[in-house]
Length: 201
Image (cartoon, rainbow, N blue to C red; front, side, top):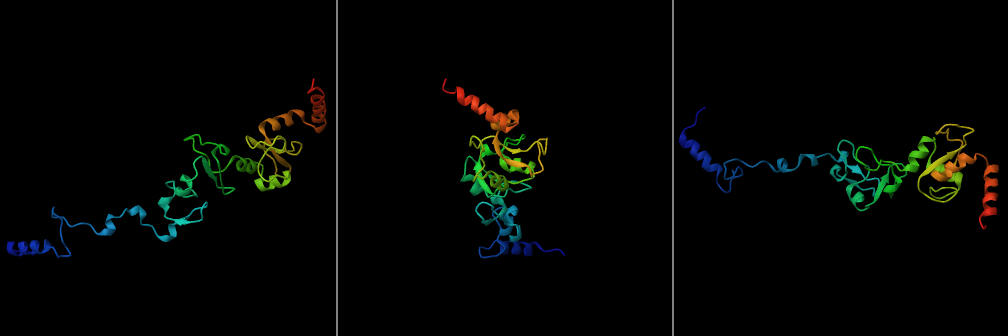
């Protein structure tokens, strides 16, 4: 169907009237609807909202870091705790020193060192603390919380991993190494007496 020039001019002027709902911009192009001006990445159903493991608040996915896999804590919680990282296993904020760093970017891994260590021994932090009689991970000998490893009976499991039933507690790297050299309690006691006898000389 062809329109006459008069009818076309009348139609154009009607579109340009101030009170018209189809008002065009100065360039002659109609603006997009408001929904089109919103970032479509933010248009997600409520079922896709995430709950922060740290603050237990349900928030929009853009409030969490990560692209294809979101972290379990929100950006607000992360930014409010500089120098700390979230352990997804024990559900707590811990110093970054308690985590191994990823080789590709240097960022802390998702679980702390004690959690990763106990996992390789088929047990949990809570169980090791129960055996050791401690309230938090620390060396059963010197009390430090750095460079901890899980001590187990090598007579039961000779390798670096254990069955979980022969776990004895946490030891730091130095004390664990010393125990491996001494091997028996009798040798350790003899060394203690020797050092005690000569410590004041």
